[in-house]
Image (cartoon, rainbow, N blue to C red; front, top):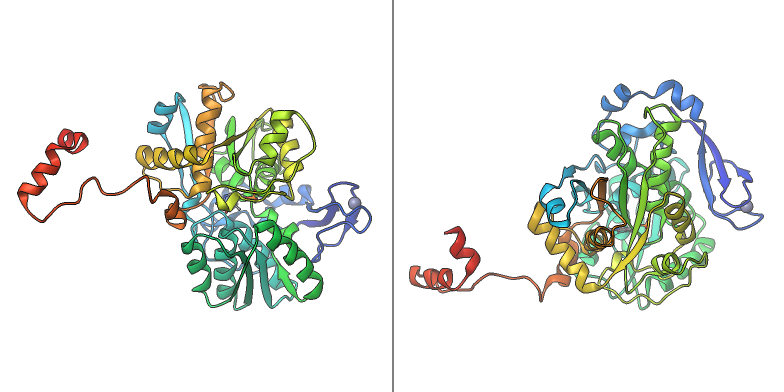
Length: 417
Ligand SMILES: *Cc1c(COP(=O)(O)O)cnc(C)c1O
Ligand SMILES: [Zn+2]
């Protein structure tokens, strides 16, 4: 049932109809989708949700386009994996990985894009467009193909090869721009007024797009048996995902799906080479100073994050923390997760795991907490990052002697022999 009440300015609370609007005419504040929670509460139940599809659309009552046939490749309902080996290594007792590498195009962006394009199609748009650090590009191109829409995707020209190929294969237009993501995003904002008939998923339909991230919280709660964790660690690019994870937990309570009001500490993870939110958190200020990104975690390389301040506010209000990790720690985080739990994450996942490790070491996350780490993208997207740190144990001639020589010279192989 469509229970959208409208849009509301996050700054001055003026209200707007649920159209392709994203900023307030009066104060230029960002708009947010609002719902009639009483009406949702009167229809939604745990049983109704568990009888739904094994995708984000099982929570359609809590999404901004409930009555449309969704544009879907099957995003969502990804595994929540209990991570005992990693927990033991970090000194935790109750750790879970939300494995969003399992999404159709390999990242959490499939959640937001499925919602954005469903709304865009309902509003009559025929072209899907975006500015992207890579994963959004993959997902917009794929979902546009699925929806029978044209796509125009703008990316920084220095992206990882896999992300460029994974976008181009779907047959849309892919424009590589010589500049940073922030340059691409600025160009995209200018294009939005030139091309009012295009749905820019992260500009004029961003309000709807952002709602898709709530499904991470919905799934975590449902997969924990309608309980919320004590602490979640969320990577920050624009900061949107982090704020919507908080909104998602709260909404479940508003509509009667949780027995108790949730109290989830939300911590943010950034790469040191692009850490405007973590820096503001460390300095105890409200001002997010834009930075020029320099990190292997390209999917998080947004130097001037649109929702940075809101993410910071969410972190502080939830008694969470925000930390940044070096590129070397990111690689170590990727390898640690792969080695302990068999999950291969992209650099953003390495940022999350390394930040988790850091917050545990600093005593910010306590061993008594039930912790969920959001691992948001697949490692095959960023194999370049590991080129110099992993490879075959040995390269040998095809003879038994050569194999035995390799075995003798390697501790790990010898131990498992
Ligand atoms: C985009 C992205 C994020 C960050 O999401 P924001 O809503 O921009 O903060 C995290 N992880 C991956 C893999 C992403 O592609
Ligand atoms: Zn306003």
